Amino acid sequence: MTLETMNLQCLTAEQVERYRRDGFLILRSVFSPAEAAELSVEADGLLERHRGLIDKKNLRCRFQSHHASGESLFETFDPVIDIAPVCQRIAHDVRILDVLADLYGEPACLFKDKLIFKPPGAQGYVLHQDFIAWDGFPRSFVTVLVPIDAADAENGCTEVFPGHHLAGPLTPEDGQFHELPVDAVDVSKSVKLELAPGDIAIFGGFTPHRSAPNGSPNPRRQLYLSYNAFSDGGGQRERHYLDFHAYLRRKYRDRGVTDLHFH
Ligand SMILES: O=C(O)CCC(=O)C(=O)O
Image (cartoon, rainbow, N blue to C red; front, side, top):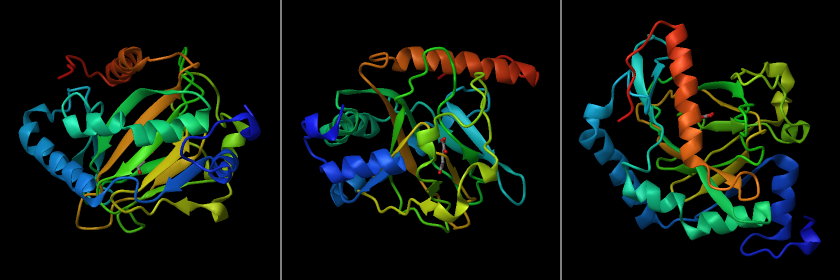
């Protein structure tokens, strides 16, 4: 759909154009300070209320090594909205859905939701694209990043590399996760997604990104909400988590880990 024929609800044509060119977009103060505070309280409470869920054999949980000591740190709940009503509300918030409808030119469907706590020292993420060539994985995959804490270079904010999404997948479409070599992107064009609570950032499944270790003394909490365009498979969150769990079970089995569960 061309910009001229689109009926935009909330973004300007210039913002849509910029997203298409760069592969990401930052929107400031989408949520109020009170809404951001409510999310923060819920994230704190989740760690207390659901401490019993934090288990290496629970498919909902991800752990990362401390970048210096190697200590294993709890890092992510994926999914999260089924245990977190405020996150659930934000994932379906009309302000996000309207932005996505403007970018897609059609309605968006929630595909995946995770809360990354990134505790102090957590190593962060190697350079990658989120698109993974599983059968039916939507090429329209887009992530809306909702910061709970201010994100900056010190605490390892997400860093995106503009323009490279236009080339599509930069690694083989073999259903495996691939780290991208650093020379696959123009490192000089790096944009650090420095965000305040209330802001959001949006980036596509082909947008290369990474994040450095959290060098601050506090967690860097962010909600990662991913969507697909309605015409690209419709609502498929349930199917995604079945595929994702099957993928994780294969990965764990290859490392000799069995008796996994999902709670
Ligand atoms: O935590 C971050 O900054 C990046 C997370 C990420 O790249 C991912 O979950 O795919």
